[in-house]
Length: 325
Image (cartoon, rainbow, N blue to C red; front, side):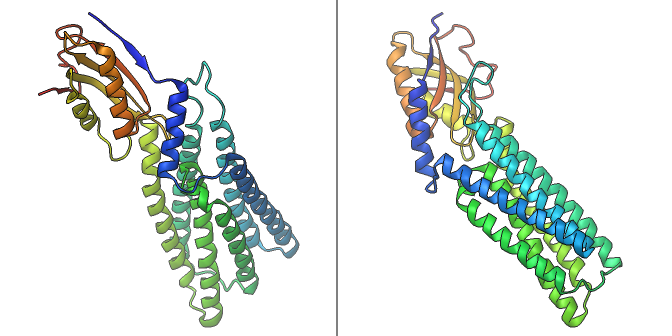
């Protein structure tokens, strides 16, 4: 039995990663500049939180303090995103052989989970207020909500472009977007109550916002879960890749195929390849790796060569197997 293990070089993988990154994302921002934007968004939210707490204590407004806590949750989501960005750029080591890029996926999962919790909290609050409509809050709350909305818009402006390129920043951005929507609801509801005294508008808007946040969180959390579960890249199936590999000249069978995403920008594949007895495996491996890179954007592949009738060459125990016709 002849076996040959082949790995793409780190430099080649990194070069392709950068190529794929620029090919699919047109809003790339320098990491340091991105860090500065996130840090700025954290500072703005922390400043607003402090101002609201001071204002709430001085004026005796519980609503103001409650809104300060809400804004603080936004700041925390940005702190988590910022920390994950820093960790993700650490070089790989003996413990983390794929590197630390998945730290951003973990951060996104934390922030999306907290969004789901917030949506349930808002839903419960809205339903309870349906049976006990709030008192007229006064223009103070409307003005404060307006200031909060302004901060939310500044934060959104700082993180919007980056959210297109990172699941991690997108989770923090949606956290902020949910807060902005809540501020709009408070302003609109407050004005309606002050002008027409229709107090049911507040709980109805709260319920609507909670369902909006929940729906978005469910949609956005799916690719995060897929990454954490070592799923194949979206829109790509292992069977399809195995079939394309099996059609290569000199390949009799491809089995034991595992295809997954290392992080948002890198995909990986391992497979057993049965090469025809009389053919030299080297050129076949080069051709297969070129196919994987150029057609499927898989920069990191590990291929194990087998000869017909040797080892698990029949692929009987494989979930994904394809024989050449």
